[in-house]
Image (cartoon, rainbow, N blue to C red; front, side, top):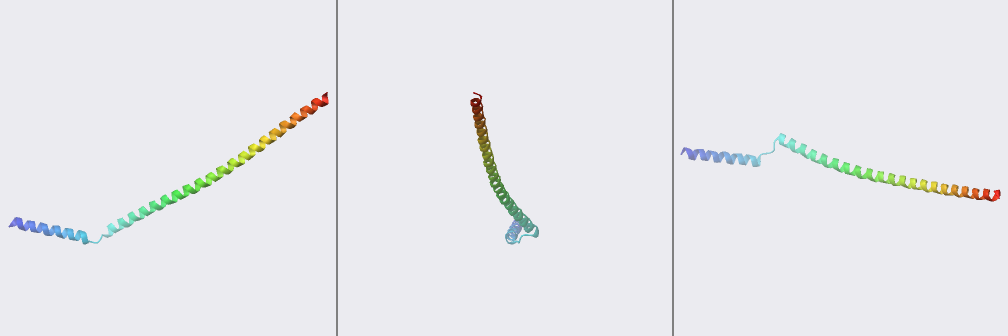
Length: 103
């Protein structure tokens, strides 16, 4: 008889524990942990979005600056080559004129 009573009490205790676990409202500590976790999750997501957006913007900006610098450098080099060719042609023409006048 004693075993049956102990067994019945264990069953009642288990049913009570299960019932309270299922229908029990979360404690303030659990709610706080849930809100904190949710906040951190959204904070991480927003930080990643901001990082990616900043990286893309800066990459586009730096690429545009690099392209402009390359264009300006090519223009400058072409201008220098033209000036060198003109000077060489003028020097060559002056040498021809001196040779002709010396004869």
